[in-house]
Image (cartoon, rainbow, N blue to C red; front, top):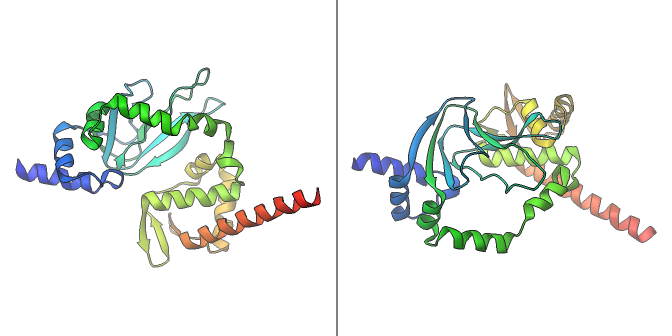
Length: 248
């Protein structure tokens, strides 16, 4: 039994977004979790289920999808092992039908949100929610209004999503950061709000500019070059706007 507990604690400690918990907290969390396996392509949970539960992806890869304005289901976030992000609060008159799906076979841990907050923060769930609402406000409403990554160009959005995926699913490679999850052109297109052919064009362009490398069906992201590219684009855009204001 002790070996099982130690193994469970080590697994939780390896999860990026809860690795800050103490051994005592991890020990309590191991006792509180309900474990289950979810097969590839099955739904882990959706917005109809209780929002009062916290879901931990212990192994595998998941994704969060929603319905777009045309009613088609589209990819929003790829999820690496760790705590699965909660869905945005509902907005009156708008339905997105969020759901979390297994991309591979997954192991899931579920714990009551109230229990998790008490273990992790030592405060009551309602107190935390009031504090979070006061501090963050409803930025999710602002994000709904600000389409396409705060008015970034499609090329910039592709660079941003490659950086995000390399942060969550990357391992060091002599040529950069290799993505451990297969990112199809269609998946990437959905993440940035583009068509698959346009995504293919931009990936080919990024490869020619040495911002990424294609190795068979895997992508190797050159983070330093992408960050420099984005910084240059941002400074150029800011300079152009300043010039326009001066002229006017």
